[in-house]
Length: 105
Length: 456
Image 1 (cartoon, rainbow over the protein chains, first blue to last red):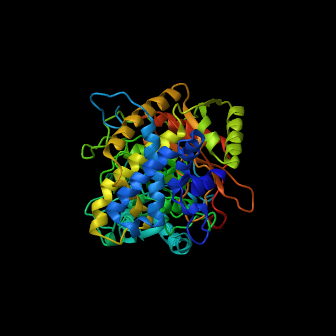
Image 2: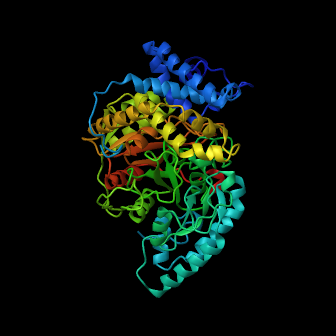
Image 3: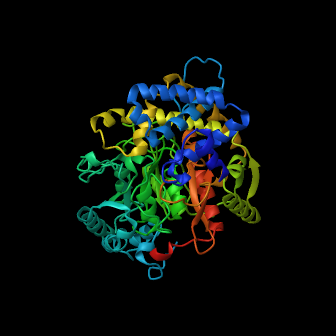
């Protein structure tokens, strides 16, 4: 699927795992956030998302060290989280007062 | 509904069919349990759905159930019917490990509340079923009975594959993103998750508390109704349990043809194969009297999934980070990475996502205002290969908003693959009675797909 190859080859800036593993190598979250990924690319917001990814990766390096951050699973998780954080941060909300519980609002 | 005792192999009986036969004294609970234990010995080495069986206690419960049945006493709805539970549900006296090696010998002293309520309704716990580790994304050992090289899905892998392979008529599962409905779709069985807060989660190991739902895997919509009637209801000991009026279920009368909303975003996101299948199913429903209209979820799918991801990753990190430090080297690679990254997400983003979640929920409720249920594919495609547990993007939106959802097997791909296809129905919060009625009508219009070829 085009969307999935976009996810793995371009959007997250990640290498495929060694040995040419299937794109299904990525977690089940990969393809769902591929939706965000493809929309993001259409909107040309790659720089903003990459800035979020850079910040998360720096934080991961400080916390877990270089060797751990090179792990492909952690790398994939950082990419997915960066896309999600970026997308959520795009939405503007007016300040609110009291906040209800998550499913009782 | 009369059951033809001779016409159906015992392992093929749904929970409802078995309960009726027991009530009519045409089936012994002891015979039923013995047959399923024998089937586990014969079939489970190929499926690997069971973590553990509990033959002694199950047979003792079956003998007690038989004694009551022959006494002529009034019987509860699931009297003598065996069920399984995903291995994140505590079970008194039976190890509950959640797929986590350090918990291999963790033996709870009390049942999780859903197990306890199913037992009160007459159910017999047969054993514990395989989960992916802590109900997250690392694939489990369980095999898909339809195709060995395909995933059974996750995280309720054993529950779905076990019900599909006729090892047990119904099994408890849980869903945080898509872990009940997606395995149901991939294994050709029925999956149902009630509204968030409808079913107590006391004694169920959490993943992400504001998204976790208890659900059921079974082989009929009627069984989903029987499950719901048994387990629904407020539990003051569970802070997520809601004090709502109980659903009034009708599992007898003929349901009316429903109004269905075909979800535009799902049609765009599914593979061409699933899109075409859904449109064929929708056309058949329309020809049978349903009203089908296309509608939108009201918010972009990419936003819905991003909000779900932020909330899930933050909460699972909060749930697990201390365990990760306590037992280094015991977590599987994907959940470990999720916990580590979840710890890095800013609190303000999590709270922003929770506020967006309420906006999304209100938009979806508006979309559902003029239909009985949403109609969409359960999964974007058939079960993929085993490196993954599959794509959650069409189930996760309804875990995010907490609406009840139901997956029905709706066909098979062409031979030789013959893989299950499935549709998903979604109703507004607390409208499970409506969802079950719609599900019964849709089920009556769909040709049964039968058991996997090697597991009939």
